[in-house]
Amino acid sequence: MTSSRTRGADLALALWPAAVLIALGVAGFVGLLDWVTENEDLSRLDQPLLELLAGHRTDTLTAVMTGVSTLFGPVVLPIVVAVIAGVWWLVTRHWWHPLLIAGAMALSTGLTVILKATVGRDRPADLYMAVPGGETSGSFPSGHTIGAATLVLVVGYLLWHSDPESSWKLAAWVAASVVIVGAVGASRLYLGYHFLTDVLAGACVALAVLGVVVGLERWHDLWLERRDPPARPEAPGGADAADLAWARAQADDAAADPGPDAGDAEGP
Picture 1 (cartoon, rainbow, N blue to C red):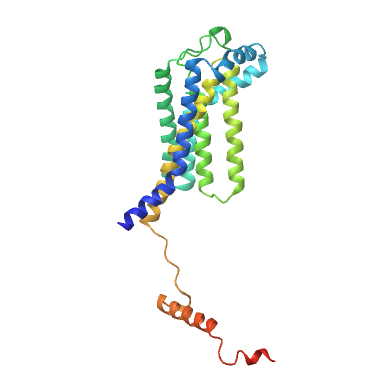
Picture 2: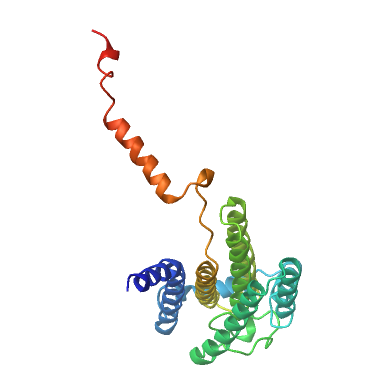
């Protein structure tokens, strides 16, 4: 019974970060969806921001934003993911992390299709699109944002998890996540294919997917520890536990009873 409770406690301790990430992602998505449905709060900025960006496009910036959007689109992104997973396996010769990366991207893609079809929000009008009619699927959430955020969050987490004491890896992960996700989200807004709430909802979905990956990775670590527990360090000099306990007891007795000459040593 004690062993069972211990395993349950270990599992809860390992999985609580995953539960927090999933809860935050789901809560954020539901909150944004409620705003969009009720046309209140942040959703009221969707149309004004769309019009502002569409009215200030330049040829150069449009080309840059189109390149960013294409890189993280449904044609190029799977190739990028395959390359990353393949290189990871070649370097480490372990299949677990490449499988997590591929699985996370498959999960994010499936969620994108299901959520778009379920919510059924229309895209911005063709008038605001850089290429009118270029996007026809549902608008909420942004699939490009989900894909980009999932990739950078999952890959960054796995790199940091391999060396959690490395502060520069954590800082690089955070910085890369902000820059890449921000750039992709901005490109979708600038090109007129999504509203602001679409992009934010996509980031929330990616956060929940990261939570799933964190849970699987930490569960895997726990499983490895139980399968191959670390060897106990041997006592110095070949002494066993009984010898060490006897030595500690003798030291404690000596400290408690300094002996008959202790008072004379202090002098008058």
